[in-house]
Length: 119
Image 1 (cartoon, rainbow, N blue to C red):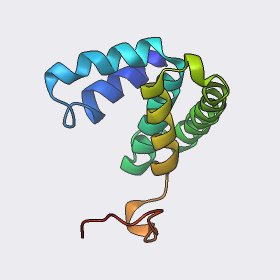
Image 2 (image 1 turned 180 degrees about the horizontal axis):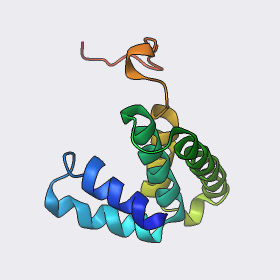
Image 3 (image 1 turned 90 degrees about the vertical axis):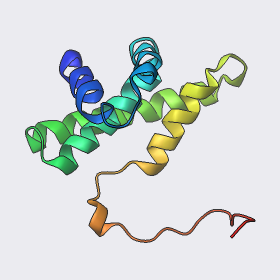
């Protein structure tokens, strides 16, 4: 299962997103940080749901499991800010905030939490 997620992530999702030299740090983080692993697996699961890849019920079950683990691990990181991997925590928080399984054409316009000073 992990090999399939990693394969889909790095050969389908990241292949067209990252430059070749950027893949190694992402793979290292994916392999070594539980919160990065679950956050990326959640993102990949949402990508599979939206693209119609895989069995929908199985993908959705795995996706929710990874989302739950990402939330749990992020909460644990927030409780120990002195020893936290800030980049991993920020990545997880951004993924939880921005990634969802709603089809893009059904998303509602969101209100920004702040207004950029340059418009």
